[in-house]
Image 1 (tube, rainbow, N blue to C red):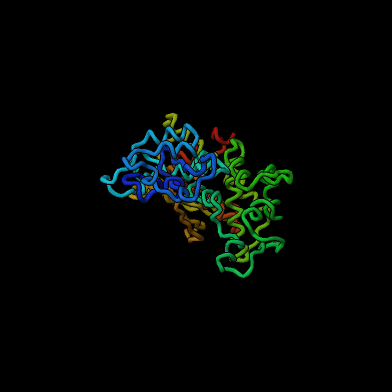
Image 2 (image 1 turned 135 degrees about the horizontal axis):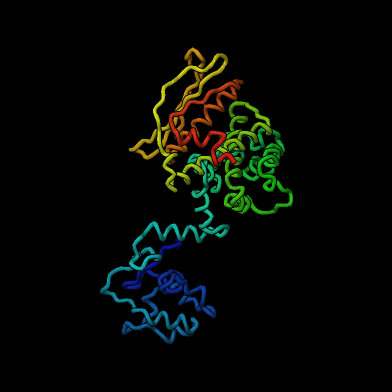
Length: 372
């Protein structure tokens, strides 16, 4: 019988006395019998373990069960014909009703590799929701590596796209691939240690909740997966050194955003005012990056968009991102990062950043306490 499911005994004719879960606590009596049962008892129903007068056949039961279980059985009301047919119930709740709470607890207990505290660590990871959601998929082995894609008949080869050296499993993608090793040595060197013999899941949760390394670790996993997808589907190869620099930059922005939220929560009112500004042309030879965040009240998600212009106002590029649930301040900072990244990737180094959030401007300024 499935985990969590048990029998509620009424007339006792459908429930197997030895092999079904019907005793309080979900005990299967056959697993605790101290000697072999004769053939006529092997498939006995609960009703068949009572006397002609409707009481428990104590003499028969005590021959096969230890005293504590025997007392537990005879302490329960024996089946009666006028109670109707036996029913299947949810055994993890006293009233037999299914609840998500008990089902989640069962699922967490069945997974013996980590406690359910580990799953909470994923949702407590201090970064953008889209990265957090990726980490949740990664922790559940739900990423479509080439090994998984081949299993689903989506690709002819399960090998690593870059080096063809091994099957592209999650373990290979994030730990043993040469490219991943190069990136880890520049971001979180401990994660690339050849002497680390932990399983992928234990390795993942160890670094994900490490106070000093969790942010950089999460971003590294995310960017490794993005880089892998760029290579597999768009034939774009990014040097490991450049990818590492991007990871470190995103970590800095995440730390500044977190510091901003903490400052605002402590009542530093000077960081919580927004001011309206208009676009102004950049000096000759420079470009401007404008970005702005907005909270969508209906979906409770935050979006940010921006544009790059030259000194004559001509549009050079634009972007938009859905950041999920986060503060406006965090959205403003992520927007600034995205705009600067677009400018950098296009080869432009003379960039003027224009924002309408005093909070974000203060935190991004060289004199901000978060820059020390």
